[in-house]
Image (cartoon, rainbow over all chains, first blue to last red; front, side):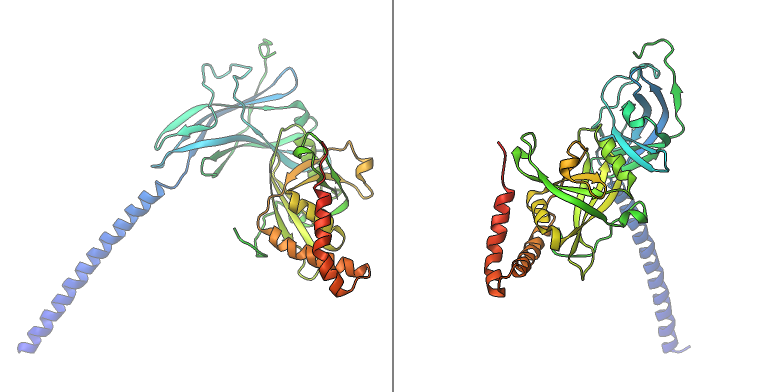
Length: 184
Length: 193
């Protein structure tokens, strides 16, 4: 082997070393990007809503009271708050009309104490970063609104402080009948 | 905020809902309880094909207020027709478009644009405010989203056309147009105390 061969071999080795170094740099950059994206995603507002249970009861004035036990978590690194909580009613009337209405949660104790000593979820409700809160959300639907309509489905609609809407389909609700007359 | 005509997609729950609703009649209402007694334009709309709108008005009676966003649109590039798109999010979620013909309804459109509000009343062909005074209606806020500047041009052009159809020369109509608009708006600013 003459001198030029050695130079060629050295150049190949240098190129291999350079490629290996670049590849390692690429892997580090990819991981850094992943971490940056993960960190960024933790700063994107989001909430997780867990629906523990839901009940409804008919009050003596024929209005309907809906109660949901909910747990709301904020998995992000920024504070958030629930600005609004609504119950959406999808229903149909005679003649095939299918439509909906929304009622806002109310801040009063339920007429029926079926969940024991559960605190009401005050809305607006602050949820700190990586924090959770739980409580009872209550809705009152006037009798005139539901008179003669067939309920199709209900869903809970939460709006956070950033205007993001979280729509949660409600499971089939259990009806509670007040046999003691306590709700009157 | 975008100014001038631009493309924007509006999502309707049902394809049928994008069909514009026709105005049956228009009027104006002034009450001391609302808007400091100023005249608020009213549109009676034919909702015979949209029972969900009748239902919205029925449901709305049980709520103190609702939420509705509005946007002005051009229904046809060739025809002088505007569409007022109303998108309700509370108490019910539904959308509809009201067709307003500039040649016949420029006065009421101007009152809506300058007054930033309109009463909406569902009705049927032949309905008039005088015969349906007790019918339920909704007050919709129509804030300026950049349309007012465009409207000034449309209204001036339409006023000149109207004056020319009344026998004025082009030059006279061009001169009288702004004055005509001024007088019309003075009429719209009437208040009851």
